[in-house]
Image (cartoon, rainbow, N blue to C red; front, side, top):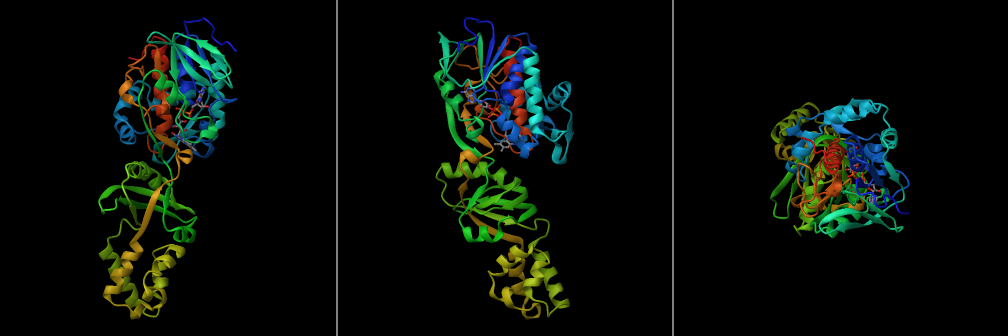
Length: 425
Ligand SMILES: Cc1cc2nc3c(=O)[nH]c(=O)nc-3n(C[C@H](O)[C@H](O)[C@H](O)COP(=O)(O)OP(=O)(O)OC[C@H]3O[C@@H](n4cnc5c(N)ncnc54)[C@H](O)[C@@H]3O)c2cc1C
């Protein structure tokens, strides 16, 4: 295979995920001749499974809110998100015939509910715009002329020469989708520093497997999870839904905390503890008072059944098991001090955390190509002329809610225009 041959006028995009496809679209709209290399047999495999197959495309949050939802170098992304915003993204999809709808918390999905349709529409658009797409073409090296990046070579011996190159190979999570971290090696060839990779948006593993087994499948709505280090220092807290799994906890609040957990464990931060506040809107004293009144009204009722009025059955049994009287006693037998203890049991569930699930199972990669070496206005490499970056290959990561996809779209758009010689103003 000898793709772009000696044609040095064009833009070469490496990676056909959302960042690469948007980069190709923007470069092509800017008048460049565009070639896209994708190592899979089809584009956007990760995008096709995103959001449970529905793909949360973006979020209607304001720009400041967007940045707050990007713990991994949010400020670096300010320029890209202003130059190609969530509204620009929604309008671009509309122009492709992909209508969108807004759901809870500003999350935007394709109205048809199928991520695959969005990928198909993007691929169709690119082909219609004359972008040459090479599938099963995994780039293995960058080509240079002095300090200038002039194309890439593929595993099959293909040589693709171009005026500029955009690395949009994604992170290293869910490698079965094609995101195997190749972009880090390519970037290193140009002298870029790689910030160590960690799992982001990953479920948390807990030490007490028996407890996890007892609670597996249980979901708790809108609770507060607080993370403490081994010395009891509060590290972070998140409010949201949580689901128990056979290994620990998942759900939005747990996923949000996972960045802090993986950072702490990588730094050898010792044992970590989670405290779940199951009833964050009720103070412990008020709860003890409610229990006392309920007990006075129904002295013959078992304490366990009283606890079940506040907690789902399985959790009530687990918590009552920690206090002998609560397991077997009647409400009338308990004094004020017992109700105080019961209130604490109802409100708080402590969990010892051992870490997160591995990077291969995480939704995003924390770390990647250091943003120090990238110009935030253009996504251009500061180290090699003609080289650009887009998407998750960079050291950027956000919370759930459509923010990661928008990062891919915005940085892809900005990189595409810049690489084509028409930077966004
Ligand atoms: C299960 C799951 C669900 C998710 N759901 C959402 C969601 O609903 N909303 C949201 O905002 N985010 C979601 N994310 C995160 C989001 O999918 C990613 O942040 C986004 O896909 C990153 O886009 P990207 O283009 O940078 O990288 P990727 O989507 O990873 O695409 C990179 C592409 O480059 C190709 N490639 C890699 N190496 C090479 C090479 N050497 N040569 C050629 N091609 C190469 C890969 O095959 C791949 O197609 C989810 C992630 C996962 C894992």
